[in-house]
Amino acid sequence: MQIQRYYTRASDGPYADIAFKTVSSEIKTIEGRVLSASTAFEAPAAWSQVACDILAQKYFRRAGVPSKTKAV
Image 1 (cartoon, rainbow, N blue to C red):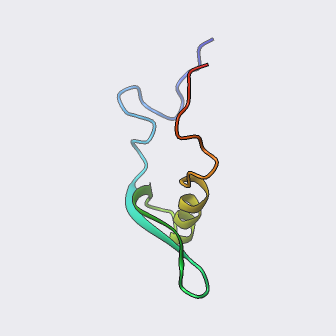
Image 2 (image 1 turned 90 degrees about the horizontal axis):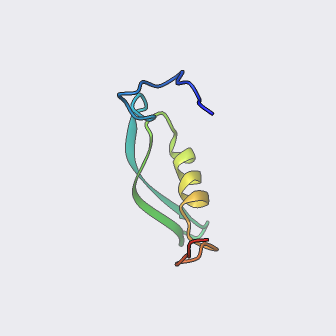
Image 3 (image 1 turned 120 degrees about the horizontal axis):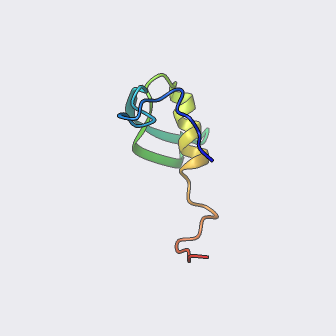
C-alpha cells in the first residue's frame, strides 16, 4: 500500500511549515501552591498560553506511565 504525498514536500519534514515557540507552564491551586510545572517545551507559535498549559498538564505528565518497558 502506498500513500501519496499531498500536503508536504519530500525535501521537508512534516512540521516544516509550522512555527514553534518555547514556552513554560505552571499550574497552581487557588492558594498559590504549584501543582504541575513544565519548563522549556516547544508548542506551535499560534497556540495560546491556555492551550500550552493543557498540553503540559495532560500530555507531558508521567503518572501511570511505566518507567521501563520491554519489547513485545
